[in-house]
Length: 229
Image 1: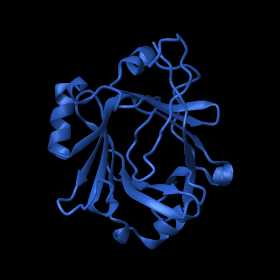
Image 2: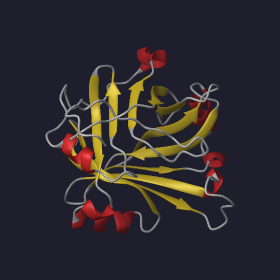
Image 3: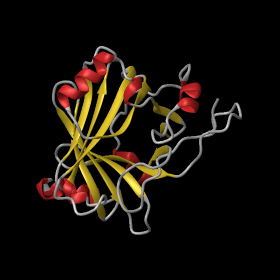
Image 4: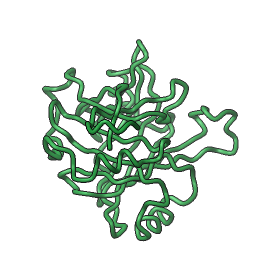
């Protein structure tokens, strides 16, 4: 990353043949379902959290920084640390809940809902996978933990053949190619679904869906750039 003194943006750039993040990330909410959106978590405000730019500049190249937007407000931001940068309590909790697997992301995440926490994402590939991009033979999990290792949020993928039809129908309102569906939980219970979809002209979207199959909102996954120091 170049040291220009200005935070330009961050992004999610997805491999065209898989749902693996290969770049940095920005998302914004689609206006398509704006009238149906449920209240969102409080945003982190107009300014980035203290230390974020320096952490983004120091992040591993394969752990892209993340920025989630709702209109002109920040919902959350995250900077990669890598497995070795996690506190011991967080690493221990992650290995107890989701042992092994391939690390996609490990870093600090800031939001008004949870303050500063640690985001860890892993994927698991079946021994029967024929290629690295065989989506039918892999699974995914995401954990958000506080510094003591307490789980604040979690999500795990569900094989598409086992996803309820009403969830798939909702996801396909945004993109016909449903690439992954995840069930989301807070610290106590399941709260909804998240789908990663691709539309007819190749754009990727993240769709948030209620447990009974209503689209809450969607975010477009776009290509951008981050310069930080």
